Length: 615
Image (tube, rainbow, N blue to C red; front, side, top):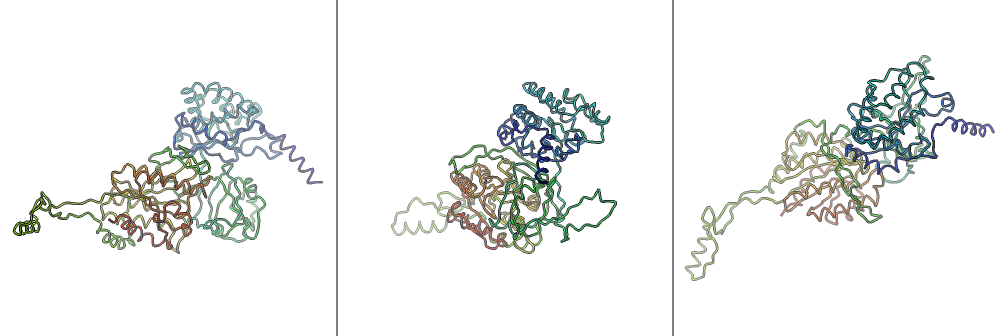
């Protein structure tokens, strides 16, 4: 009975304290396509992706009813950074659905006009006013919507007369800034932050990575299946990476009376492992303010898929070109969806020039000697009608024929020295997904093997004179496909290229179809007769969305078919031991090779190239 009455009271007080209108909800999923089109139509950066915003504590003053019900502590701030426009996963702020939809449209327009460099924590109010004024000046059609939204937002905001003096001054400044964008130069200081402004974008959250060492994959990450998976990607969550605590008794804390009310630290609470089951891990995770992610090398009884604001290992790259749209094959509908994938070409920001690692000098010298046989050389072409020197053999043969009464043809009596060039080029496309962070030996990860392979490959091909390029790729959904430029065809091998190879880091996922299509567009512009595309991979195509299983396999297959139609010859080198199950379907029986020992890749790659281009 006590629990029953408690449940009734909780539902009553929560309903009474909640200031939202679920019946008029508008969800970002329903607006996603419109959001992308409108954002770019208004001049927004075409390389940005739209994603749900994480809910964070705002710290503003709440009324007594909200404090009693413990509601209204968090809100999903709209925000924008160099890569993402974050919008609330759903909007229920107004009783009219049209107003909630108009709020989405206004936030998109605000995001397109906002100067990210100016939208810092200390002057975000000025940046938002500037963005609002610029939008209203460039697109007068937004004026009516904006006035309606301002009236509705002001009606929901606290009355300055009921606030302390410092908070009232800040509230009046915000109201003035909403009514007349550009009229407020700064926000007055107050003890508490102001109530969140639904019409403005906030500074993007800072991703935190506190780990002292790189992440090691858990056993569950090295195989498919074996545990239950829950999907919790309906909204984005604040997250940070942590090193796993050493202590085994995470809940035993040293007691200090003076820090009892201010203690905050990472506490390892053991969640279920293989022998346990979680009733609803996604629900439990949804109640956390910030999700801290650490690895302890154990399997869990269930998996939860999140959309987290985690820092990538490749966060320091800067874009060279963005907004490149590519198609994607939908095998269920048997149709090619145009402009489905957005590609950004990146260059490593921290790639400092450097020499070839000393441990690779001798192997590189040996491979260069082996591939020198493929180097175009000058040779004498005999029996030519014209040439720089007489062909003595041809002259003697013609003289003997005449003396014996045989007719002498019109064959030439000269020889010429010519250089026969190899009419071919090669593009190496390396998989830089998160799985390359897997350890393959006591001292090497997959990404380390890939670096060594690219170093030796580039050094060895320097002996042949064949033009070649090197690119890497990873992805996170179709809107965020990263192509890393390592070496263009017109660049020579030097310390700068070696530095780019050394700066390679694991990225996100493996949307292979889009990467192959981008590589094909590069090779299609080359004049050589043989255009070879060598793909280095460690697993199946996959991404965080629906791009996995049959969908990813079929899209990759169609991209390879399109490459062959452009005259490109694809070849895959993989260390995936299960590759035999899907690689023949993609590359054909002779279009791939599987290396059982990943450590062999650096030495095998140049030799494979020699075999593929011989003759």
